[in-house]
Length: 314
Image (cartoon, rainbow, N blue to C red; front, side):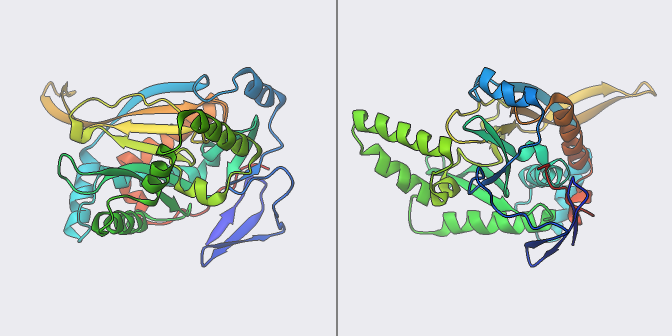
């Protein structure tokens, strides 16, 4: 597959390995295990990190919706094809992954007052052990390549969720880690968290921890559909480096008047987005959201890989 980065260099993806023609980027001083430091940003972007040093103080929140008619038809068709339990979650994940492939700036993150381009796409969400009311729940992280199709996303998500639900163990690796931390006395726990934040600030936190941590990644998605409430505006965490939270709810019905004077019942997919405004400007975010909505309205576009994958600036 052909990949074009924002510098005009051409890359070829073979067996999930990126090979750059005319460029051989190697990890440099200042890079992290989970991201490459961006050094070509304008001075105001650099200064803003010191003016707004935390994610919670830099978050923007907005609400949007899309007509779900075409998405519902697409979902029903996929289920007929044998994609059991295929749903809006898969379409939303697919839309976000595809948007990152074209607008990689929304996959940046900030640590230690520096902006990094994330090395991969990591999306976390809560998954229940079973559909029983009191069934245990855990956070699962999915890692995707930017050129995946919606079918591949479905297969990856289904495999990982099934593995968790069918295992005899009640807890995931992340839950076990949290359980260990839960035994630490309060004074020592305060020091432990401060130490982890210090490691994260310098980019020294072990990679196996960031792979387990839902606080590190491209996006966290939460569904309000089963709760029967409108999607919340979820806050960003100051620990870790997740720059975006998306929440969505069950289908909303609304009566609308057509041009012909007829009243029709429309169904909408409502979602909220919380973003770290420091990773890219408002115009860039707006263009990315338009792309997300385009794929939500036309999910069939996600069945084929993108013609090219855009690499973030250096």
